[in-house]
Image (cartoon, rainbow, N blue to C red; front, side, top):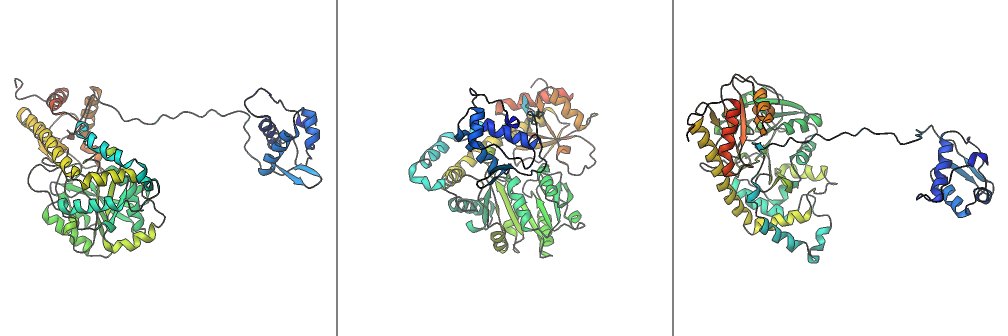
Length: 472
């Protein structure tokens, strides 16, 4: 029994049977006990090690279950043939990899930041408190795979009233963001390889398409939005656009190009448009821009939007609206699917919308963001006439451009060193386009009204842009 002499620590937190099991197992793996060797009987080994037979029995049972030994009735236990397994005498030190953290800034002009003080906490808390009660215990179970019908119904009403989107709850699919919903849409078109996207545009969309093995065609954006003539020169069958407020330039797709885009999609059966209407709620001048989906007569537009800007990014509620012609294919493709947004969150949002609080919240936030937008543009126009502003009157950021001897990268780094976050247009380029002057997005959502003026002056001072009215 020399081969089974193990150091068993009786005062260890690890049970004796586990110590014995590991000792025999490691001896088998390291070939210290040869294949075919008969192990001692439970009684003999118990006497030898001065432990109970039950301890031996449990250890042998575990080795038997894992295939290290075999039992021959009325004969005993024998070591089995084991393929070479990795055997580590001691734990290998694994190098710790620190996640890449988003840089924090003293002043942040990020275009995706919302006004945190404007959120209706008390109202939201009221709806949450009502739902977290035993009478709603069915919400603990898995709900409808496309999302709760109550929420889809409210979204359907809202879209028709505010965006002219013609839909029914059956056409709406709720998910936890573009990162989760866009791959679902891609799955519906497994036979289609080519996708056109805006340049500059959402880089996340480009990454998702590339990760799903799709060919990407970046299409240049000008002051009228995506250049449809360039799209027509590609072999793309699906195009991803932000027509109501192009990100990041702020351009609105002109009426002529809207018609051209819809006509392009109608020319072939397998052509579709993905319309991302990410922040259409915040338009400060004139009537809201009509959605492409509302203009489409051929069921060629898949409409997408989110509550990220209108409520909060952390809610993780987004949705798409499928043409009725794609519903059958969707249901066949995603028979296994379950909605990724918690049911409680969906019902809180549905009730919040049903009772009119969402509309009130949007009206209140529209006024707050308009004040910030107007204040930022007025400061720049009054004090820095050399700076051009575009993409205004919509959304939560403006786009500025100006002449400078330094590059966008150098200007961005210069601001970052002083604790100010600014975002260059080149950051959003899928395919780099020659630019004669630096262009930056200045988001105002996360800045208070009182912070904006000082933040602008401080940024311009860092960049060495002279103030026209320093006494003001």
